[in-house]
Amino acid sequence: MIAVFSRGACVAFALVLCLVSCASHALAASSLRGRVTHIYDGDTIRVAGIGKVRLLGIDVPEKEASYRDRYLRQRGIAPDRLRRIHHRAHAYVRAKSLGRIVVLRTEPPTRDTYGRLLAYVTLPDGHMLNRLLLQQGLAAVYRRFDFSLKGDFIEKEEDARLAKRGMWQ
Image: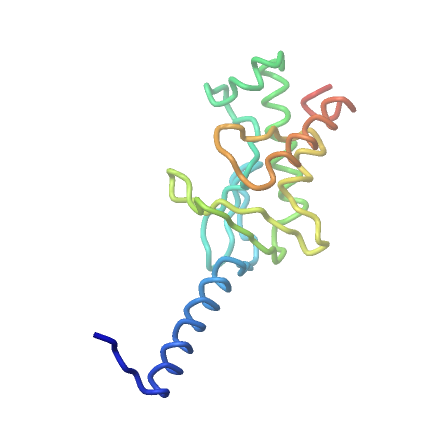
């Protein structure tokens, strides 16, 4: 049996398909924006209207000694240096972002196990905060999962290590 549809029904169906396709592309490509209202530490901020945001793809040393610093400890970085880097990263993120409107770009998965939004954070001057922290030697690449900029981030971390910046001195 062949179904016969009116021309109007076919046009309406095509329009619905087009709208659904356009909407899904817009959601995938859209950016969030908001003002940074609080700095928790060097890799977690609060953005008005969005909530807690974890900088995607990087890891800053913890405030206190923690198993989470094991990657950096395995690279021979002393615990006291890690604590100093934690404070420097916190101050750096505060100076660069607090009170400023940032653009957040996400990719799947969009949330971590703590419910924080995972995002690349672009500052008003166009620089990406995640990348700046790596370039300054104030963060390391978060290697436990894949993300689109992982190769670029590993390169920036290596550049900081070779230049002996931040924690790599």
